Length: 174
Image (cartoon, rainbow, N blue to C red; front, side):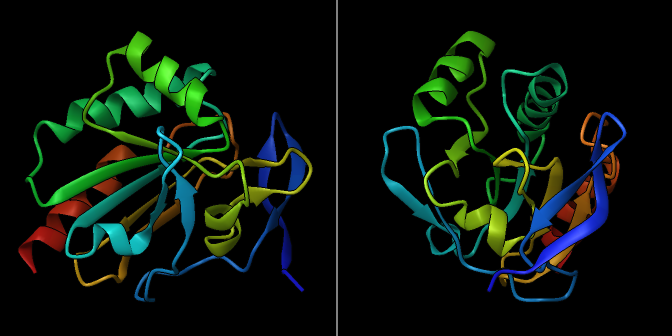
């Protein structure tokens, strides 16, 4: 049975339930399977040896998610080639492709968890009531260990970009 957690997030002040036990800094990052924009599966193993920033958003078609993905796209140009930035949502891959084209986002890889909620349940960010993902950011070092995790308490608020980017720099210095 998959664990359910309450009291962690709200949406416009209303409490929601997260599905999955969640992850902690220092743990090995759990495997997941999501879909790329061309519908091919992507797993954590596909990024082995890279520092990963996993930016998690409810939907690219909302203002805060749009801004979060654009900001990480801008930051990507300043980072090492050994860093990959992924944005994962439950948006359909076709909608992600359309959004990236319209937004000019080309340095962030958008991935869809719509099919199985594999990422959402493995990382404890799937919202039971909405079948969307909560706003979060995870940094995984090249050795596969979680270096940073933030699940934003109020889904409509921003992630801590500076803290996440600081964790990326720390991973690169290892």
